[in-house]
Image (cartoon, rainbow, N blue to C red; front, side):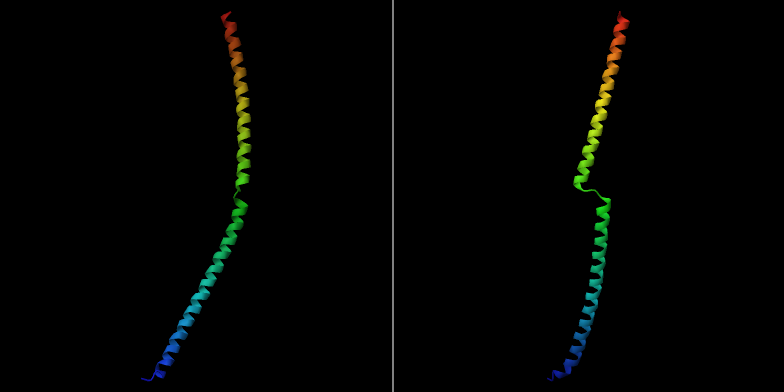
Length: 94
């Protein structure tokens, strides 16, 4: 059997396969570049909009201090009110 007859069609099929693979490679490369660009943009957005653990800890500590200070003030006020009420009740008993 003469195999030279099959060389032309096989070369054509291999050429077509190479063209298809090249097209798929370039499309995949374009998609990868877009994903890379989107990821870079997201990283910038995340860095500007979201806090770090350190910043979050500092904010929580600051808020805790404010709450503690306000709680102490309210406790002092309640103590003073209680003292006044006790004095008033003692005066009424006499």
